[in-house]
Image (cartoon, rainbow, N blue to C red; front, side, top):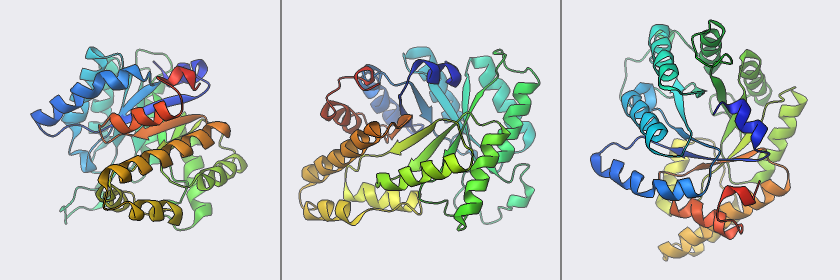
Length: 304
């Protein structure tokens, strides 16, 4: 479903993020859980794209399989690092032919261990350049839907790690929206006040597209430390850390506390008219399902 129709139908969207499995066992494990995700009734799901395009084929395969074999509506991520314009246009044409209606356009990270990587050789230096490329694809009438691809971009309530000047960072987000982005999905955060302040700054900057809040339930201390490495700049409030460390000798209690924290975040965001909640699931359904259940909902329809 085109994202414009999604937002028209749903006053609050609920969405999940998956990553492409890297082994046959991981593929099987994900699809054993797919029915749980389907039962939660998400507005859409997104599929990540590895650094430098390292999961290009796996991303495509997962998106197509979800599209064909499940009730879920998949949105592929697409990054511009290490890609030529011709490659991006070929990927867009492939997704358009397969019936994909939306793309999440990101800058992306260079592959690890690629010492010779030179960003000046890329056809796209920034995510806004990728947004413009997708919009040009749409304007050329190369997508079966006259509206072309719906385009999503990333937002950073706690600041982009590569842009220390927060005023300039907001200019960059506004440029992506002005270039044609239809919605913004945020990086994960654990303090809702950061999101509310960022949302107000978006309004002041004239950003009027839907802003979806990124939520990740912490399931272990190892998981939290890995998130800190992957999402540089994410702040873990002292109250959250205190609760986790008090329970560090009881993995089940750590997980329960992480789910409780995410649930309280969601409840508060819904009370403050969030436009959508986007769950970073790590391909696991249990924590996300527990958040829904603790909110008193067996699926997303109750919460909209």
